[in-house]
Image 1 (cartoon, rainbow, N blue to C red):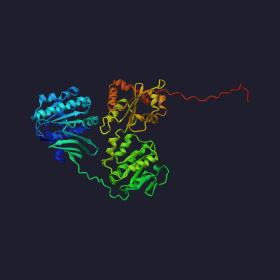
Image 2 (cartoon, one colour):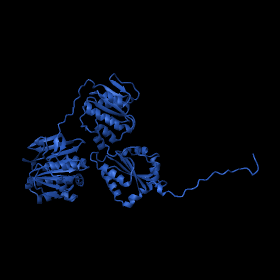
Image 3 (cartoon, helix red, strand yellow):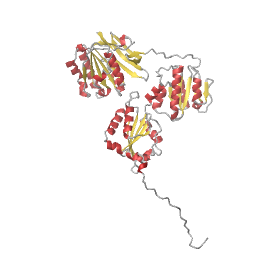
Image 4 (cartoon, rainbow, N blue to C red):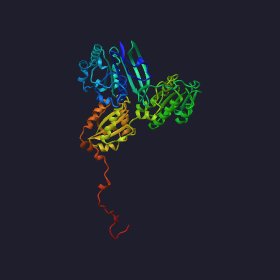
Length: 513
C-alpha cells in the first residue's frame, strides 16, 4: 500500500495526515463551517480530487476558492434522501475510477440518522469492497447538530474504516481528536491536537499553558467563604474563612495549589462567579482546586456547565449535606486540572448561554429564538431545554394566564398559540419541570392548566417549531393582537363631565336630631 494523499494540516506529523490507497477515512465536525474549511484545505493539497456532497451544493463548499489544488474538480450532488445514500457505491462504480484521485464526500449527520445499524454496516462493507477493487481513497466529512450519535456509532467500525477523527470547536481553538489512523503500515490511536485556523487553514498550536503549579507549599490550604461550613468554625489550621466570595477571590490571587471554595446562593451571582473562576484558572494555573458550593437552589445544568468550562474542578449541589461536601473536597485533592479554558470569557459565555432574552415574545420571534438555540452545535445534543404546551382550564383565557407568568431566567420564553400557552425553558431537564413551573407562575400551575405536552429532544422541538411556522400569517397575527396595548389615539374623543357631590338628608324635612 502506498500513501498517495495527505490532508494538508500544518505542523502535524505526516503519519497523522497521510491517506493510504485504497482507504476509507471519516471525519466528523459539529459545525458546517469547520467542515467547509477542512475540505478546502485538503483540496488545496491535491493534484486530482473529486467532490461529492449531499449537505449543500459542491460549488458552495469551494467558496472561497481553495488556495491551490487542481484546476479542474469534478463535482457531484447526491439527493438528500436515504435512497441516494444507499446507492452511492453503485454511482461510484459507474462514474469514478482511480484516475479521479482522492474522493471527498461531504454529508450531513441527519442523512446518516436515516440508516439503521445493519444498513450502515452493509453500506460500509460494500463501499470498502468497491474502494479495494478500484484502488481509490474516500474521505467522508460529516457535520451537523446530531453528530454525537453518529460519532458513537462509528466506534465499532474499526475493520471497515482506516481512520476516524473528530474536529471540535472550543471557542478560541479547535481540538482535533484521532480515534485511530492507519497509514504507512502504522496504526496510531488516541491522539489529540489543538488547532488554530488562519488564512492557510488549520495548524497546530504551540500551547504555552502552565500545567504545573508554581509551588506546592499551599496544597493543603482551604480558602472558603464561611457560609459553606454552615456556621461551623474552621475545621483545622489549614482552613481560612472569609466574608464573601470577593475576599476569597482576593486571597486566591496569591495561591498556587490550594483548594478555593466559593459559595452560590442566587442565580444572579453566576456571572460574577464565572468571571472569578475564569480569572483564577487562567492566571494561577492548573494546580488550583476550585470548588463551587451551592448554598441555595440557583443552578440549572447550563450554569453548572459554564462554571466547569471556566475552570471549576467540581460543583457541589445544594442538596448535598456537609458530610458529602467534605468527601467531595477530599476527592479533588491531588488533581491537576486538564481541561482547556478559552482565553475569552465573553465568547465562552455567549456559547454556553446564547439566549439573552426572557419573558413574552411574539410567536414569530419565539420560533426564531428557539430554532436558533436548538441549532447551536456548541450545546449538548438533546439537552438544550424543554418546549411545553399548556392548555388553561376552561375558566381562564391564555391572555389571563400571561399576567401570572413571570420568567426570571434568560432563555425562558413564553408565547401564545390559539388557546395554549407555549413555554420554552432553556437548559431545563424534564425532572426539573415542575420546580421550574412553580417559580414561573405566581399561582399553583396544577390549578391553572388542564393538561400539558412536553418535547425535550432536539428533533422533536424543531419539528414542533416548524409546525408553528407553517401557520398562515393571519394566524400568527391573531395570537398577538389581544396582547397589544390600545393606542392612545383610539381612546374616545368625548370627555365626560365630572359629577359634583350632592347633599342628602336621611331625616324628614324641618326636623333636627
